Image 1 (cartoon, one colour):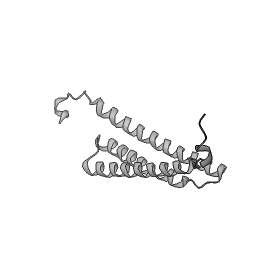
Image 2 (spheres, rainbow, N blue to C red):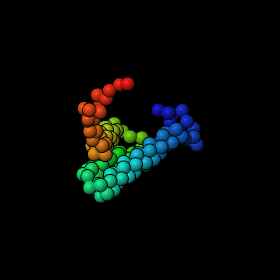
Image 3 (tube, rainbow, N blue to C red):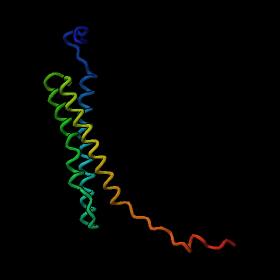
Image 4 (cartoon, rainbow, N blue to C red):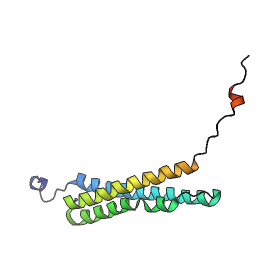
Length: 127
């Protein structure tokens, strides 16, 4: 629609910048989640507690699929079509939910168990 309003030498920079920032952000988010999984792996090795680090490394793979779909769409038609949008955002949503689940499980492992206070210590006489 906007191409009709532009001269041949003009170009929509905001579309290009938005696509590139979205791709870069997706790749950085994926790298961050994978590094979080590697930290969980080190935690499992050192403290010998099961952290499900494999799940944390593979859960964000949908974010990478989203980035690949965007790269393919950007290189062929500048933006995602409807089918590509549904597929890409479904992978992104599923991956985000699975990454959150993995982070919550890891939080349960690393959070120390609080022991109840002794009954005698709580009822200390007041002076």
